[in-house]
Amino acid sequence: MPDTKHPTSGGPTPADRGLPTVDISGWTCPTPLRDQPRVVMGHGGGGALSAELVQQIFAPAFGGEILAQLGDSAAVSLGGVRLAFSTDSYVVRPLFFPGGCIGDLAVNGTVNDLAMSGARAAYLSCGFILEEGVEMPVVAGVADAMGAAARAAGVEVATGDTKVVEAGHGDGVYLNTAGIGLIPPGVDLRPQRVVPGDVVIVSGDIGLHGVAIMSVREGLEFGVEIESDCAALGGLVESMLAVTPDLHVLRDPTRGGLAAALCEIASASCTGIVVQERAIPVPSAVANACAILGLDPMYVANEGKLVAFVPREHADAVLDAMRAHPLGAGAAIIGETVETHPGMVVARTPLGGTRVVDLPLGEQLPRIC
Image (tube, rainbow, N blue to C red; front, top):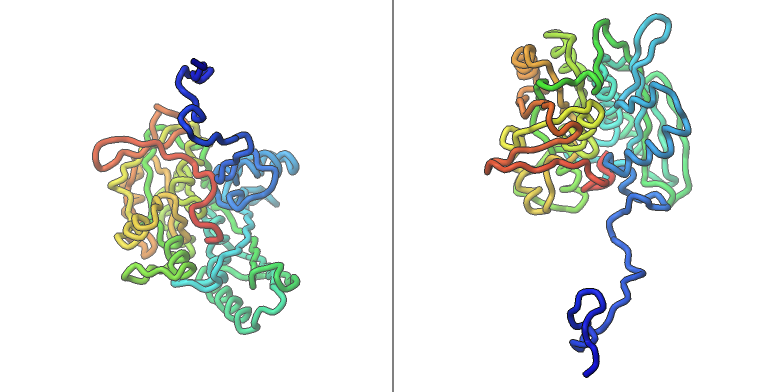
């Protein structure tokens, strides 16, 4: 009788059972791999692939201690004053969405990056990359929205640039904005200041922007219109700093959502973070949409929210100040930092269990900002 045992398992081979044999040596995983030889969409998603792109290519190429901090904006000293300096690019699709458009997004996004350093934005630059054939009323609508958002945020668009690319080499309108603002004396916001015992506060409902973009892009209806939370957070941050300049770190959870922001802070501060899932404010419409689509609201982008790490002795006063501001009315304490599991974020579920909150590989929904 022929030997029909598998050479390693001792069991019969697929051929012995009359099943076809498959050569798996050429198989590849459809999920973007960490050693991709080419850029994939996940590299722009604000997750692990984005971090690797920055840490393995851009940071070594540019060098410098300031860049190495990898904050939303850079805190620099110039002429005896401390400035926050930031730049960002916007490639959102569609250009107009419930609650705003790419113009609002570009202004508010850069203003918010500066605010996360404690700075009130003063001046912005603006670069328009236009695709040949885009309608002039579309360009005018984006520009008008940018101007209105800048005036509302108390910032001036002081300089800019325009480029046009051939038809088929763009997506209508891309924007780049950079901004500068003054950091008040005594303010030092960075992840390295986080210590065990800090209280974690989020300024309101999460997930609105990403779900709003998805609803119009895919033509989905969830029974109620969901609008982006796109807003400038400079005033809210000022009200928080008025309570105490001793906030430890602020972050606006855009690409990668709240989860990515928490993971980045945990890693940079070498502290553990524990959040209570039940305490995280998720609107029912967002929760329902994410449940239908198999998404986790913690990973969905926001454009008008912040997460703050505050010393415990100031937490209640800061929370009250946030709730007194229109953009912080839904603020909630969602967790704390701990000495255990440094660099890791853990969520306690409503059922009493725990789960690790990982940095996303890419983005659940691309092109959301």
